[in-house]
Image 1 (cartoon, protein in one colour):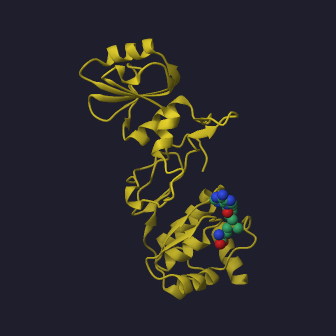
Image 2 (cartoon, rainbow, N blue to C red; image 1 turned 60 degrees about the vertical axis):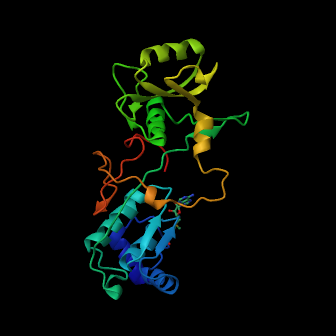
Image 3 (cartoon, protein in one colour; image 1 turned 90 degrees about the vertical axis):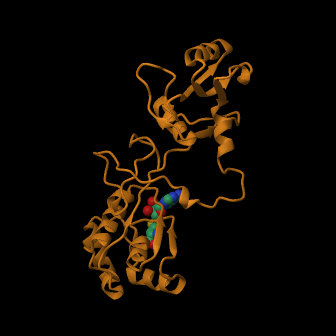
Length: 264
Ligand SMILES: C[S@@+](CC[C@H](N)C(=O)[O-])C[C@H]1O[C@@H](n2cnc3c(N)ncnc32)[C@H](O)[C@@H]1O
């Protein structure tokens, strides 16, 4: 135990908030008994990241989830040392670990929908217009590219297919005006809080309400919540000055809103 504490002190300094660190060799024993190489180890309360660090050194794949800031203060620096072969403590020697591998880091946005006091699903107030437009573009596989000149062009899927996201309730007059501006050679997906009139009246517009539309595309209420790992988006560099979220072979993954706030 004294050795484990010394290892944690070496990793995180004297002000380490974790007063009861799990010794790496205890975790090694657990993983030895319950997993084999390449297995996936999940710790959804990651803390200082001992589970992931040991799993990594033992050639297991891992997923860690953490609510607090320890992700930046503890876990990422610790796993970087493991990967760089700079963490000489814990089970490093026992398992013959010399470094290697990598990881991806995702910062989760707050839930897009929340329930209001009447039990209706509404757009979370934490989302400003820009965040909402970017989130909806991601959901719809549109490229987020708001136009300075055309207010309804928030993104595009092709040169002629655009998306417009608004928290307004749109009436027939506004939809008609949109349809006129889009014209016969282009199409527009309109995602709004609500609309009045028949949505199929304009052939160049597809009009949908955001809350019900999002709800239909989520897994909520289904029995199968399996994570489709092959559908994960490709990692791309995270803009500075946000802290480097990934390491080595796996490049950085921008958070949903380019690092502009949100929950974990
Ligand atoms: C005691 S630590 C975990 C220690 C770690 N699993 C180990 O074996 O050394 C518990 C951690 O869970 C995190 N946590 C608590 N609730 C959470 C939640 N709902 N989602 C993710 N992390 C959470 C806390 O922030 C804390 O860092």
